[in-house]
Amino acid sequence: MTAFLLRRLHAAGLDDVTAVEPVEGGLAAVAGIAVRRDGSRLFVKSFAEVPAQDVFAAEAEGLHALRDRGGLVTPEVVAATPDLLVLSVLRERPADEAFWEQLAHALARLHTSTVHDRFGWERDNWLGRYRQVNTWTADGHEFFARNRLLRWLPERRVRAALDERDRRALERLCERLPDLLPANPACLTHGDLWANNVLATADGGPAVIDPAVSYTWAEVDLAHLWCSPHPPEAKRFFATYAELTGLDDDWRARMPLVQLRQSLALIAMFDHDWGAADQVRAILRPFRAG
Image 1 (tube, helix red, strand yellow):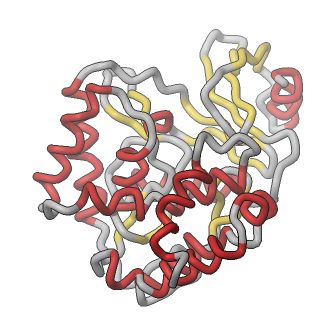
Image 2 (image 1 turned 180 degrees about the horizontal axis):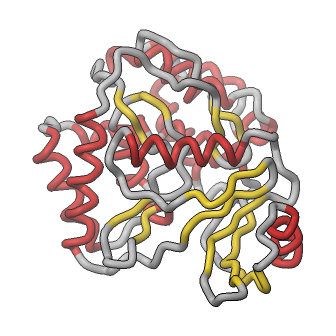
């Protein structure tokens, strides 16, 4: 896999790259560390079969938006071609509570400083290998239901994992979303914010990668961090974020429902879904009977 990354780097004009070292952690793309002739290093990612010509341009756009509009730290974009994304190298995050508290301040600032009057984005972008539909919508419940939940029902693995009663239950849940989730405003969100997409700068500050940005509910980001595996030192993150943003006492109860979007995406993307189908069926169970 590193050989094809090296070929694509040379084709993109980075012909001083002498080797590519493999890295682990990504689920959808193939990634590596490119070593240049002068000893400097770059992060590079691609797909063996690129899903569309705009996938890396959209990701680069998201990185710029998070930095320029919301103040999050993101890697520098060195190159974004139809089959390759090249970024500056970040480091592993430190295992301490102070780091996660810094991230809470940064995420709260992103969410509170970018409030928007509509839900969506300037164009569709990508969540892994799957297109994320971002058609502008005035109503947040309608946007979330159509473009973040029901959008996954036609996908092959989702059709196999959920029976007809489950699919109808999801439709009923979507009809009741205004009763289940508060009508919060839209703001700029990372869109794929789990712990593996949180890294650190050279001086140890928080930085993020792999966005699927849109203007939607802030709790989309919060739910992904809360419901996916995160280290014990991240505990302070949630308390700090809640204090900074004025979350009500019921926010924890809402997280699995908001995370339903990501659970459906995991089913669609991978044969092994890490228990996502069971989680989805458990959330849908009360809605199966109508």
